Structure formats: C-alpha cells, structure tokens
Image (spheres, rainbow, N blue to C red):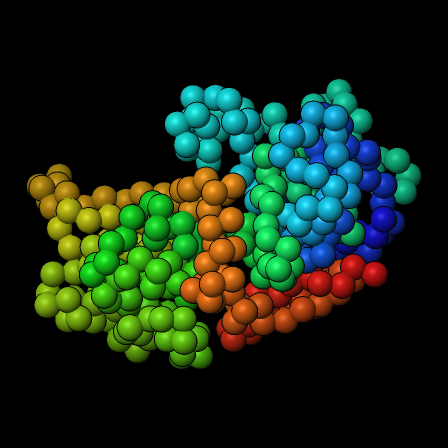
Length: 365
C-alpha cells in the first residue's frame, strides 16, 4: 500500500510502497478515508520524541473496517470508525476507574518486540507506527481499543479530527474543568485545538468566553465559533483586560493552548481565587512557571495538565459525533483544506497560515 514515510529527522515525508500485516488478536484493519495533519506529527518528524524513523506518522484517522483479528468483539467489517491515540488496556485500576488516559499498560495495544511488525518497507524492514495508528497511509492496523464506531452519516473528514484536536479542546472544558452554565473562562491560543475549547464552552453554557491570541484573523475566527470577547495580546495586556471584563476578580478557569512560560504565567494571573489553569499544549523542557511564594497559597489557585481532554475517547467521540449531526458542534469550519496523501509536506506548509485551522487528507490514490 502507499504511505508517506519519515526516513530521517527533519527530512519531511517521502512516498513509498509499504507492507501492512494481517490483523492478529484484537487488531482491526481500516481502509482510511480521512487523516488529519496535526502539529504533533510535525514535531515528531523534526525531532525524535517517541517514534524513531523510519516511521509512518499520522494519528487523526477515520475510515471503514475491512478485516478483523480473531479476538475482536467491538467491530464488524463495514463499520465506520474514527481513531484516537489514547492507548489503554481496559483492565488496569486506572482504566477501570474511567481514567483511561493514565492507563498503566498502554503497550497492550501494540505488538511486542518479538512479534512481526505491523508495518514493513519494501525491503522487509520494520517501520515505526506513529502513536500506534500510522495514519499517513492508505490503511491502518489498530487495536480495537483505539477505535470508535461512528454513524455512517458522519463525514469522514470531520470524523478524523474528532480523535485528537476536537476531543482535546472540548474535553479540557467539559471533562477536566467541568465548566458550568454561567461560568467565565479564558482561552489562550485560538488555533485548531483552542477553537474546540470555545465550542466546548458554548455547549457548557459559559457566560463569558474570553479568547487571547496574537493574530487578528485568528480572533475573528474565534468569534465565529462563539467567543464573547477577544484580546489581541500583542496590543493589550491580556491579564488586565480579563480582570476588567470580570469586575476585577478573574475567571473561573483558564485553558492554555500555547504552552510557553509567558502564556502560562498570564493564565495563572487571570484566575479568580481558588480556580485552576489547565495546561493543554506540549511545552518545551525549558518552559517553567513560578507562580507565587508560599505566603500566597491561601489563594488556592492551581495548575493542572490535560491529556487528550481528560475523558474517555470511546464515549466522547461518539457524543461529539452526535452533537455535530445535531448541528450543535462546528466541525465544518475546522476543515480548512483537503489534500491527497502525496501532499502531506504541502499540507504542513498550508498550516503556517493562521487562517487555516486543519488540513485533512481525503484522497489516498
């Protein structure tokens, strides 16, 4: 099958014909109909973090089930599915408590080192499968725990982005922070993931959805998704403006989708007493935040990391699909461009435009 392969760090994606194994155990083979381009894969291509080259990256996928391993119980051939990078065993204490993002045995969703690899190149050498999905290819071989059945009327491009950017942004608001009707919140960074936090806040019924970003065009998009107030932080002190909008008190939750020391500090200072800054973006190793001295601990402010929306993907992705089909979740405006599999490099160039929210592969010929 055709795939776009990372051969060397920083070398981009190159087209190759590769081999995909037959499904074993709980594995499901999916003929891909859509695969989203996410910044995490760009980071992996440029600097090895978890998936050494040669590798097939791509982790926002949707498609149709074509083959099943002998132990699969959740799917049938012909099912429409979306994938999610959360790897969970479903049996450990964390999984049974519902916190699958902290699964203690995520390796149960991949083949062991002694097993034949899922993906091989034309010379028979193993290829790393990025995030256990490998979505920049015509087909994917995935453990059933990482797939969700979706309604057949759900368009594939919109379904693909559910499994990362959408579930992360909406989940930060609805699951991690449990934003309530009437709350005031702030969102820092209105890119492809931050826009979904706005959607989550609209669904929750937040009274004030204040969005801070550096780009006016991005802020206009934020307003179209439901932001009640926008702040260009290159022109205005965002902390002072948030305090002004909340009668000097601050907001009940802040969501940082930038992941820099400066934005984390801004987010912390935007909070009302007793409230929490939710850190979503992947920050670099040198990004730190000094919040306060011990004399100020009675303010009871907190910082909490959020991974993949702090929810249960098998539940949340199906709910989000239903909300979209009901017209209550804006996914159409997230898909800014559709490309072919061979255009992955060009697709990442498109994402440099702040008015491009998500680029999705929809042609795999």
